[in-house]
Length: 335
Ligand SMILES: Nc1ncnc2c1ncn2[C@@H]1O[C@H](COP(=O)(O)OP(=O)(O)OP(=O)(O)O)[C@@H](O)[C@H]1O
Ligand SMILES: [Mg+2]
Image (cartoon, rainbow, N blue to C red):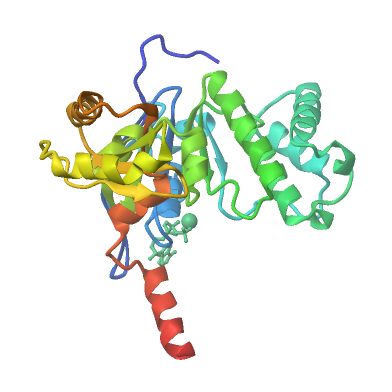
C-alpha cells in the first residue's frame, strides 16, 4: 500500500451535522486525524460517537458539513472512500451461520483478494486473535468475546489505511482486551490511521495519541492526553519527607509560605506524603526551593496527573447526558 511521505490528515471533518428529528446527534463536529496516528473519541452514551463513525463510513449522510477520509469525500466519493477503510462496529456484523474461516475468507474475496491470499489472510488473522481452534465452527457457537475478535479480524482483512473501531473492547475480558490493543498497536506500526471510540479511559490512554471529547454532538475538549490532564486538573506535587514525623510541619511550611498560586497542602498520613496542588513548573520549583531553604530532608518528590477518568468527569461532569438522567430517574423510582 502506498503511503504519503508528508503527514497529512487521513480523516478531516469540518462542521459535521446530523440530526434525527429534534435530536442533534452531531452538532457541528470538527476533527483531524493525522496519518499514522490514533485519535480517541471519548464521550458518554448518546454523545454521537457511532453516528460519527457511520457518517465517516458512508453508511449515513450528514445534513451539513464535510468529511474526507484518505482524501475522499463522504458524499461525492463514497466508493473510493470505502476501499481505504475498515470498520468494526459497536455491534458484531459477522454471519452467524458461517465459520470463522468462512467469514474471513468471504470478506477477503469481497475485497478482491485472490483465493489463496484470502485463505492465507484468514488463517493469519484467526491465529492473531486466538481463534484458530474455533476456526471451523459456525460463529453462532462463539462466545461474545470470540465474536468480537472475529469482527475485529474481519475489519483488518484488507489492511485498511484507515480503521474505525467503535468501542472495540466493550464486553471483553481483560486478556482479550490486551490482545486487541496489541493488534491495534501492530496496525499503527504498519502505518494505519485509527479512529477509536471508547468509554474506557484506560483504552484511550493505551492507544490514543490525541483525544477528542464529545458530548451531545459537540466537541467539548481535545488535545494530547497529557495536555488535557494538565488543562483540566493541574497536577499534584507529592512530597515525601525522609522522616514521617515531619509531615505536619512540612505541610504547614508550604501552606503558610504565601508562594504565588500555591494555596494548600494536605497531609496523607498513610501514604507518608504531603500533597500540594500546583499548575506550573515555577510553582513546583518554588515549593521544593522553599523546603530546601527550611532544611527539610526529602526522600522523594513527584508530580501526579489526574487520571483520564477524573479529567472526563471534570469536563462533562455537571452536565447530565441522557444516560445519566435515566440513572437519576431510576434512583427516584427506587427511592
Ligand atoms: N437512527 C437513529 N434514529 C434516531 N435517533 C438516533 C439514531 N441513531 C442515533 N440516534 C440518536 O443520536 C444520538 C447519538 O447517538 P450515537 O449512537 O451516535 O451515540 P454514541 O455516542 O455512539 O452512544 P453509545 O456510547 O451509547 O454507543 C443519541 O441521542 C441517539 O439516540
Ligand atoms: Mg455508539
